[in-house]
Length: 242
Image 1 (cartoon, rainbow, N blue to C red):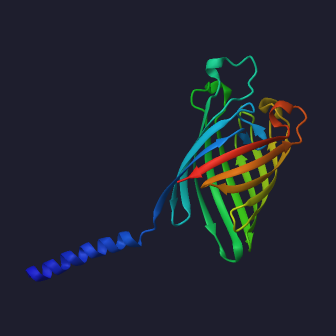
Image 2 (image 1 turned 60 degrees about the vertical axis):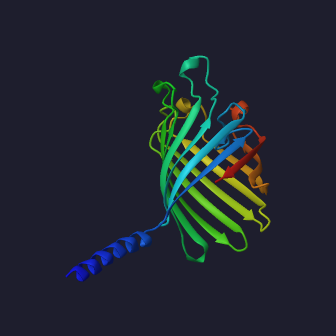
Image 3 (image 1 turned 90 degrees about the vertical axis):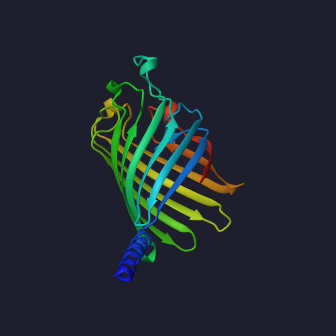
């Protein structure tokens, strides 16, 4: 009986380890980045100034992920906003799922919340947004992407918002990459948001330099009433993943 008990005990232990070994792996990754200007959909978030950014992400083998991302910000708020009420930091939290399919196709789903700790609640900066995306890759190194973002109540309590983004990327074996993007941002209440509906576009040349991901970027929009925040500009970004 003792021998049978030991065999059953060891079988139970082995089955537990086998079940853990069969479970999908969860990986933790992170990034640290420096950029000469932080732009979101063609609009500067740092008054054309530098930003230090970072993120932590958990990736499940199934394709599910969750993460947090942060950056300093400096919005172009008018004189009615008191200095102590202004936003200095942006923290984004998000969960999502992405999947690579056969024949080069991929898709993704994502839910995100943009938060600004310390900013006055009356400014209504915080935003919830939901994204659907699809992609198609063509060897060697060409990928097209299409994303749609929906917010039930965009920044400044400006109502529903819709964002459409088309990207095309060419990556070369030596680590050099070239990306072109064109987007359209539409907001229900333009007066509250402070900007008209607009198109934005940009190009980026990226490369790996001493294990750092470096990019030279150009961004512009078709806005006529936001020259200080959404005009054509070149900015440089450097990041490191770990």
